[in-house]
Image 1 (tube, rainbow, N blue to C red):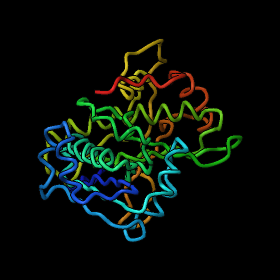
Image 2: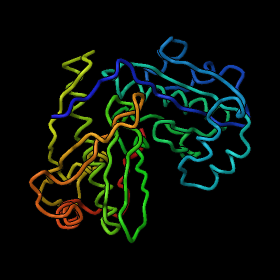
Image 3: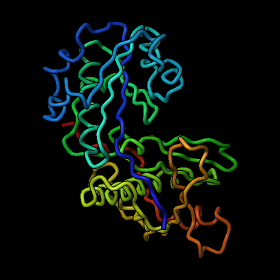
Length: 297
């Protein structure tokens, strides 16, 4: 079994980068939010809103090095002179609803000032058009809540790590020594794991609110069909057999380091890990050629 420390509170930090600072960002958002919880958070002690110049916010370097998918985000960030920091605080049992509410507030403020939203947990700058949307009432990890970062050489071994799960009071996931040819399957495996483990975590939290420690099995099973739950989409095609996965805590890098769980072959897999990725995971994880994103709310 693995012992997980459950934090008493988790933060949901977002930053709006803009060239047009708002005089009253809370009031600007109040008429734009749709989620009832977002309206309740505005002006409450559970949400902190601060405005600073780019040079004084403390986020400039992070945002400059963040993942982004479109060149227009870079252009808008270059023009930004002001940051609006929106941070929600809540116990893990209040997730994911609290994080959704905080992000909707950030989106509303970005829409009011033509800004760009940076998600500090997933370390990504969200598309500029994102500011015009609304939070979907049904939570879905694929709605820009989870990022996967890859390091290493394509013709060698890769190291994958997720970003975004810590905001829900759960460790991030890692995959080490992944052969370059199995990258897509490894990303899919981590997404399936994230969906299944988060669902279990939220069910446990609902029954154990405020508990500081949770014990989880060191081995779990991943069903390739969970990738469709990741996208909140209807399954197409077929997935292979479930995959047994061993979870192990990553070595701690200090007392204040955040926890990570490393996914790998089960203890009784008597072969190199590269064969597990190629002969087991790659065959079981379905190939999704295009993101089957659901429609916005």
